[in-house]
Length: 408
Image 1 (cartoon, rainbow, N blue to C red):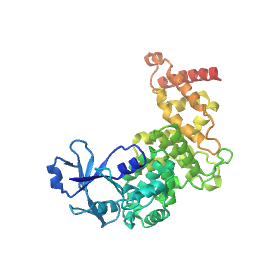
Image 2: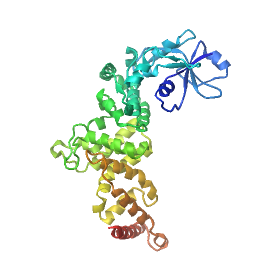
Image 3: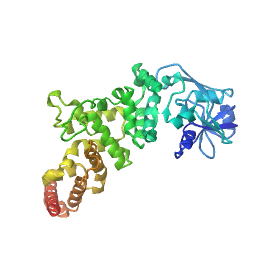
Image 4: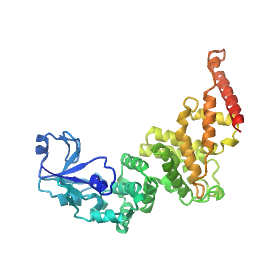
């Protein structure tokens, strides 16, 4: 059996990046011969097998031919006669079409090493335009490798723009869009994912709620960057600096969706955007099948980020009610993600990126004060129904008020 290490593993080795998984191409074999050697089939649409010991994926060398729209409209041809170069030709970028033999020889028929050295994302052939997922993949590669200086080749960006204009992106299924978005949110520079999509005009199709924010003004006194879309990406950038958690990064990115539907006669002010954006967030999460923990945190941040910013001005009763709705009295530590997203919002403004955010400590202090209240007497007393909740609320308001006075 003749095998070659291919794709991301070779690319990342050459970039001195950690290699998380290894994929192999097999020449001269058939599905029957692979099974006879103990490999297990895992590919429904492609001839892919799992190694019986390492569990690495081994794929028979194949070619692909476009026969229908979208990324599923391909005819796959796997044959012992398919060469390594033919298999590499079907891949998306030159940097992903480098192979390595079992003796360590690098096979690079399309100039991938040169593009790695020059930090360029370049498509291999016009067949790139046949698979719309490749637009998402390049955007994600930008999020992963952008800090190294990688740029998209002009001709590749032009091809991506043509694909969008031709409607190829319309065939992407929500699950695949979310899968690529999730991976991008976990990368070092997730903002570049959205910048690439915007540059090739795919943002307005895949994330119209975000695209609408660009060009929407905000008061310069509070937002020196003015543009709401730019602010949203700055918030994501700050969230990426504060935490690796994709849930927080997602919430920071989505918190101002309501500003995209502010009536023009009210601009640049956005009173009530904390609530007007909730249906937009709901629709986006429903459309992309966003997991519930992401949606719940994003909703909390959208509704209460301005309360958090103004926490020193809030009445104890208002602060108590906010913390109750956030579930902070049951689990004060659970506030951490909410506070990180709010901090990212506060710092996602031109010239204010390094400003301290003391509001987070104040909110946490109030949550701990409210959670420490002994409510056993109320629960075992003679009060009934809503009276119990009202009594507990008053106890917490007092506890929070006293704690705020001590720290003022």
